[in-house]
Amino acid sequence: MFKLNFNAQNKSQGKAPGNIDDLVNETKSAELLLYNYNQNSADLVRDVSFEDILSVNFDSQVQWISFTGKLSKVQVDFLKNDLKLDPLTVEDILLENHRPKLEELDEYIFCVLRIPIIIDNDLLTQQFSLVLKNNVLVSFIDTNDNVFDDIKKRIMNSQSKVRSKKEDYLFYLLLDAVVDKYFYALNFLNNKYEKAMEEIETSFEVDDFKYIQNLKHEILNLRRNTSALKDLIYKLSRDESNIIQADSYLNIRDLMDQAHHANESAEMLREMIMSLIDLNHNKISNRMNEIMKVLTILSTIFMPITFVAGVYGMNFVNMPELHSQYGYPITVLVMVLIVLAMIIYFKKMKWF
Image (cartoon, rainbow, N blue to C red; front, side, top):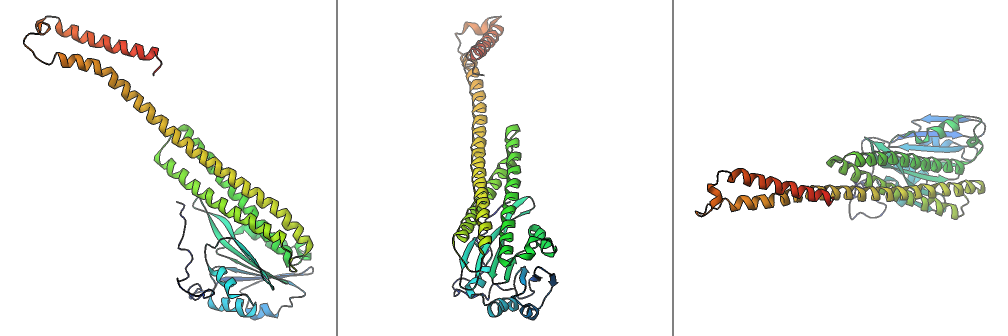
């Protein structure tokens, strides 16, 4: 069941901005991967030490530092002290369920994104943050996801275009992969919408109504995130930065069109689910009207024969019909004729 989580940001209330003591992981560290590459070579280092990261010649190689999971205090200190990230930036990285945003500082570009993920046939999102510096790209993601597997393979391929490009091109590729993930999510929700449409057309159960309401929340959440993603990429494409090369800006502006398309598709899907909900309500109303019509017709049919039965049930002394030999069958016959006459009339009027 889809639920909005308003308590995901675990920072204690009243703490000063940049205070992240409540957000770090005290028991274990995030998984750390390091990709070093240039046109001539590429290496993947697992469980790399911070000393090894700092010993790399930034001018000759591109570094992609990938964190997966919740950061420890040692890792947070590395971000603040060695990579020189602002405490507010680190706080935004650690806060869960953060709204997509883009910040351009003097030394780096920072952005927060939401990546759609499917868990138990429900569409949710996980946080993905990027820090782009000269020759260094740092990424942060909540859980492992295969959304970037193709990019990682391309880095290790000596013939790949990414090997001859700088870190801003890798930054673009990661954004492009996130946008592609939204199109996958749109297809997933569209399939669920078609299933809901079929269920409404064939039958209706209480579980169908819950299914539609859950689908509506998923679509609205996706639309909110695609809208924020579109605004983020638009802002990124309009602002000039010395960290991003001119050819990468061309790619980002092309990516803006895809983000706009994803947002339009999410908006269309929202209108479709709202129409489906209206159709569902109309179907329920029509069913209730049919039931009330049948009950009204039955009540109308029984009213005259109930009247006849009531008249002859008064047991007055001076009622000759009560002593007639054929009084009972004649009365029953009259009741049957009344019922038949009313049914014929209702049929003629096309009331059922």
